[in-house]
Image (cartoon, rainbow, N blue to C red; front, side):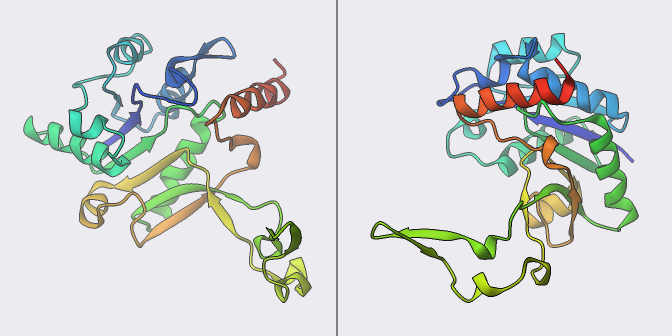
Length: 229
């Protein structure tokens, strides 16, 4: 059983320039994803897929592999994550190397732990899933959502407002951190979330979107609180 971690770190970042290698709490952001993958002990290979020479050099210095650079197709603004993963598998296939399982890890995950990767990986097999993705529980029922219409605040669904929280089924959202998938299922369904996908529920302390400078500042504050830095 061979497993590969593919960290997708494209060079372009419009809202936070050079986000993937920008220093976060003392080290490059990319380092957190690489270190978590390495420490989990479950991967035969940890690679970084990038189109950027500076990112590639940093990744190698951090102990990851960069066996090839991304093509122009998978480096464009229109490429999706599946395209990147398919390209990596295809390039390895050219040299007769295959992987039974892969884990796509996004590069801006300073709260990702090796323990979460390890547990999610094992859960995929123990629960007989083809894939597993981390999710967080919505802090409040989404059925109680409000909208603003013509300057007035009103319930999105008035009937749902009357339902007690304990009578509602919990809802979850994609944490956007990593995706485990059996390669056969990935290639068959052409998605990281095939029909037989399990949920690895993580605590909200591990979940943090970092898309804007405001997100970045919030993540730094959160990191200081959690890590006591």
